[in-house]
Length: 124
Image (tube, rainbow, N blue to C red; front, top):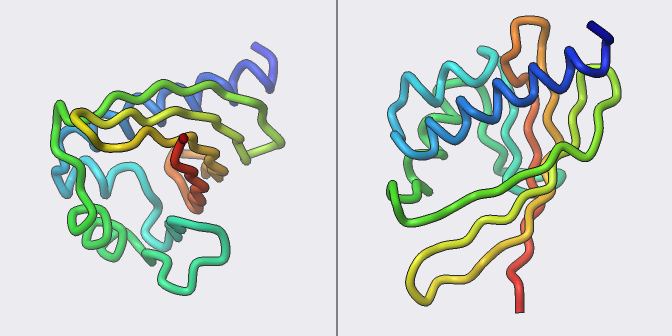
């Protein structure tokens, strides 16, 4: 197995778990995605970034989306070592907007995220 295919498999596995946590909103599912000292930025250089597993769980559940209220598709744009670049589209139900997403994800050797930064833009 090549290094790049291994990285893609790690990212795909993490993304499956992320979407499961997004659906469940269960603290243990969210916590399992991240290292103990992870940083989750809802925008680049976020002064209010969610810090550590407990901070991420708190931020995530406060901003939670309800199951069945959204769909998400994604594509891995590339990797550079332990860093992955992911492009996604989040579509919300009803009259809520659709968002284009760009995520930068840093995975540790165990497959958990040590850093996560998202950019999102509402579609016209």
